[in-house]
Image (cartoon, rainbow, N blue to C red):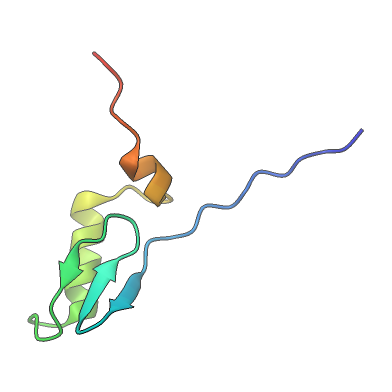
Length: 66
């Protein structure tokens, strides 16, 4: 019997997109001159917009009906 291992979820990260950096999960843009820094702005974005371990697939799933 073959055991399947769960796929690990990639953590959100900043990705290069020309002159911008973007969130790898939601594609939110970060300008290179954002203050105090792009990394700090990204960390703040993660705290507000994403749960730990959330992937792009999780983010794009429709919300369940209430």
